[in-house]
Image (cartoon, rainbow, N blue to C red; front, side, top):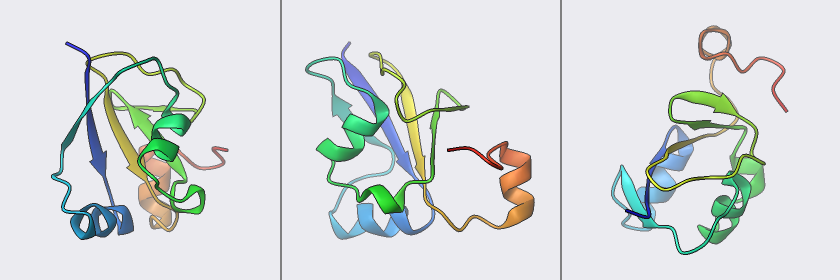
Length: 92
């Protein structure tokens, strides 16, 4: 299986809805890509992604994705207590 499962939160949820993409969305992985390359492929603006979770763990956008991974893009603007609880204070 070469599929990824992609989730979107906050304003990205609305972007997915505008594009008639289901959440979660399944993506067929044709070649190895990083989370940031996947963001580019999906045409999600770079300024709309603050962090990415891969398999429920906060990871750099430079992380290489593997078949079966679950990816969640999170936009800027998540309230501070949630930022702390999710572990992405100061993540770049």
